[in-house]
Length: 387
Image 1: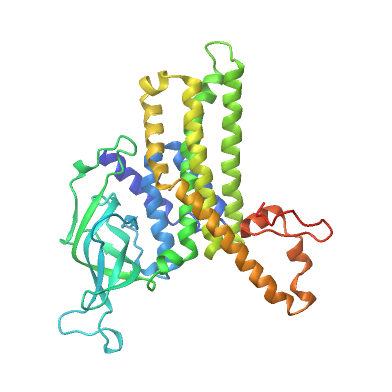
Image 2: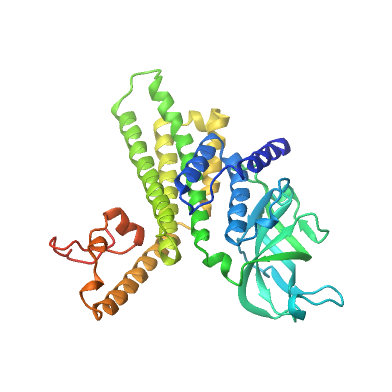
């Protein structure tokens, strides 16, 4: 297992300088690469993705100076029950920060759950709850960079990770005891930057690749059948094509929206929710359809297929299912309200409020913005809807 992880991290170091950052005109290329990695091996892709995400975060924060050729990175932003990880401003003994002010250095203390590869990477981007210099919570969260070789950095025993899916990606809580930390951005920057949504969609691209790898089993069986292919098998194959095609299409639309500058703020959040929910549902559909079509054999006698299915089932649980569907609905209504208010304001300025270019935006662009558009002369829909 250690050899597998080391090989994947080495590949992550190689890919880091080669792949584009999201939002800079080549997002589709980046996500296609992530999807291909997921189709090859989900655990392999799951190890590589956080390293690439961390590099993108550092780029977005303007902190490329923290990137080295030898470091490997993780990103730990999950929250859990219990006492949170706290970030407290500090200064060296007898020292002061910039402008003679304290608080320009930080220390992390507490426990962070769900830290993948904590015993394997050299550095990590981690979110923590901010306190003042007296340790009183401020109600804000912030991102920090930490080194994992500090004596106060203590991962839980790897034996706590008993998962069959993504077994190689050991994920455990980490206890921090006054671990020095370099801040990234201001309070709440990590969660409010456009790249937060973009990174979530990059993960969904890997899910798609994993779903394709599960579907590949049925394709190969039907291309080289041992008995006549019946309509039930044809139906299953057609269902896989429809499901995976729809998931791939929404990722492509989202990549275009990201590069067009139409996936920031709430619009970016809507795209991320839409993409992740679509792909996660597609993955569950693929697992169900392939299982029904192929019977118990692959799930009991094909170790590679078993590993694919179990890893995909674990990975897509990063999706929050119906909660994210509800969040998408709330976000769409909020965007519609914002657009209505903007239109009301624009109406007071005269005919220039609606330009021909705005009125003739395509259906795909309407979805990218998360709000409805009306084409002059076509009439209005009975209800104002995003579709």
